[in-house]
Image (cartoon, rainbow, N blue to C red):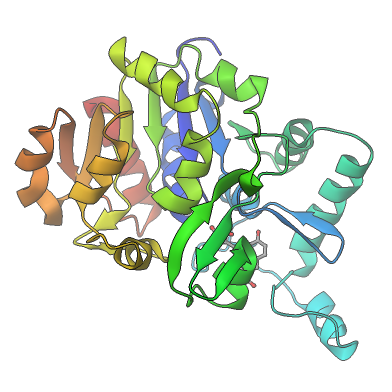
Length: 313
Ligand code: FO1
């Protein structure tokens, strides 16, 4: 890292929106995205990396923006043929997306690290900023629910995030290491930004890797802005089960609850205008608060939020 780079911690859908805004505001070499891989799983013999792929498709202009994941203009010949054969069809694999999973799996099976595979695939699709898996090791997020422990995609897609969550087991319950590239990206960034992703299943898997929280604390103490964007707006999530998870874990979803989760590692929290009434209380706890429009519907919204964060914090 040149030291002028921005390190951006991101999950999938919500995080990718701001990643696009940041990519429009920064030269490619000044933006490094650290991607959650806790949602990754093996399906039909293929290694699927949803948050990496959402970031790759978003930054290459190939994303299905309405859906939030997968490719625009996708076709379903493979899924139709799978159904004909009685194969599993609960997890949609579009024909073009399928090539990503096949080629990733082929390269991984040839012994290439996920970091290097991701560099190749992202570059092949014309992505400028670097997208770094948080680790090269398998680090599956397991969702503990009142119906037992569930693999992430079983919970999120097959069961539509309906089960009541009681906890999370990150990294498959085993110690996994952040890559050297991730630690280098956090060595001397100009700023660290934590995207508006689900704190439990998209950001904590990154923060809870050995050394990451300590690294952010050191940067924060040294005066490097560590800026989180709240995924909760007006007591609810824009998309996905974030608010539901807060409630099921006994907490009221709010920007205050987000501030409490990130307090030890962030210097700034960006909240939406609708939550401006909470700004003073959060600021009182030592976090600087920026109040702006954080709901990103258009490309212009994505760019405006990125501009506010890069300029203000
Ligand atoms: N999400 C769904 O709700 N249904 C799907 O069938 C589905 C398929 C899928 C395939 C590839 C991919 O990269 C993502 C996919 N997702 C699907 C989204 C994925 O489950 C989530 O984006 C992340 O795991 C959470 O951010």
